[in-house]
Image (cartoon, rainbow, N blue to C red; front, side):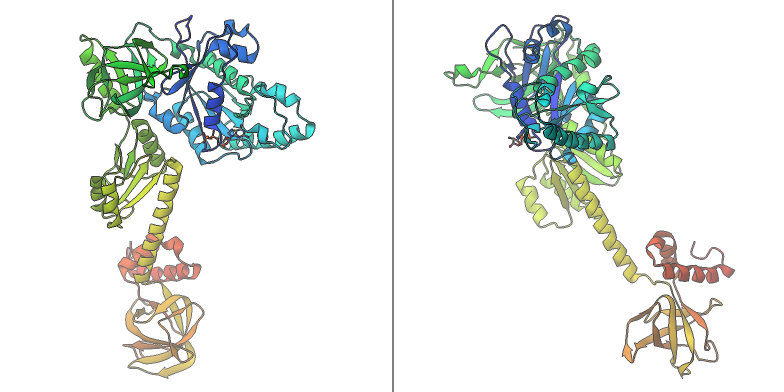
Length: 593
Ligand code: GDP
């Protein structure tokens, strides 16, 4: 651990962004920031994290005087990139990550996961920077390995600089669309108001000194108060991953953010039921590469102090939950600590509805993020759980009658083989599975739209639609039983077997045949002139030439037409319905309401 002068722990940094935009490459580059053996300290490899001490950062930036300016001991980068790790690192309702870096490929611009990362950071109010990566791919770019951005930028030709500016400001525009005021980092005076954007190449190391420097600056300016820790206090951390290790059994990888953990300590770990109380059998860190003569990849250590990543071997930790807290305790404080761990798990704000979909996610944090995004999109959620999709989940979903809720949304989890078997024979249950929340949401919303359209179609096929027609003069072919007259459809549609109504509201007969140019047709639509047989009327008695008649719409159908699907009717159908309702409501003002 880097020595800390002011009782400030190392800030924890997460790297986020769209797949293939260069998160891993950036982290590799940072890990490789070892400088030639000298006075500076070395990069320390933790479990799940890499620590870059302040000396290395200032050395990289070429100005040793800076060492005195900074009081944080360095930066601890979480090795697993992605918003997934960020949300897993949950602590006290927020994120454990103190800072974040959002990577955007400068040649590709914004992608769904870029937006997802920004939304998550906005919600957690985590200070962050954006890096526009892969500047070395800009046509004509001359690489200056490991230099600061401004230094390499000045050495590019005006053409290359112009090309860069254009791509760079596209990204600034993207950020603006997402509600961020952003600018190139060296032009930002107030990082609280304006988001700093650093052009880099994770591959060539260009711009990396700037990234480290700006992160330190942000930590110093915005986090100082939250980085104080108690070196002698109980160890407090978050479970990053539960992992089987050969020869060790189940282990947990933990990011420790306060206090000290020691071998033999009693710890309380969060899980879905009662918290686990166990004793640390071993604290493990990665073994140096030079020590390959040892069989195990891990080296036992007696104690570890925050901030750090460590592997813990202990009995009874199989049910530990990624994203759950772990806190060390003495016998005196045990009950209080159990309560604290429980309440942190209960704090997971997942309010469910009476009806709705089922959500499965891999960690508490991602479940929370998922529920948040879906609620925002007005999706009702009946159940939200951590874990893979099981046969029981499928069975439960199959009992739901509403096809829009007979759905399992699975984020970053597997579908168990027996659950898949059941799904194959249960087409009513739909599973939407992805590792990007937005994709699941998009797919689900498309599905809902499709379902609604289908329902709409089904309903409109059985509904009596509005229709009006006029008996044409000189076109009475038969007086009665049935009367056969020539008509023109003035609005809507007239189908065979529908009843007809006079303008005075009386229902007088039933359409018993329609012919267009001598051929039978099932319906006639607006503008058509057809021969119509009407049973139950006599021309000259109930009806006569030039009369305007209406399709009789039952009251229940009228309600659907007027109040549910009016917008989907054509203008002539709407007009016809209005006329029909006026007639109906002359004597009964509340008809169809
Ligand atoms: P991740 O999915 O965000 O972790 O992306 P990776 O770090 O795996 O990078 C995806 C691809 O882009 C790999 O082929 C990298 O070699 C390449 N890449 C990443 N950063 C750079 C860069 O700065 N310059 C160039 N030329 N290629 C890069």
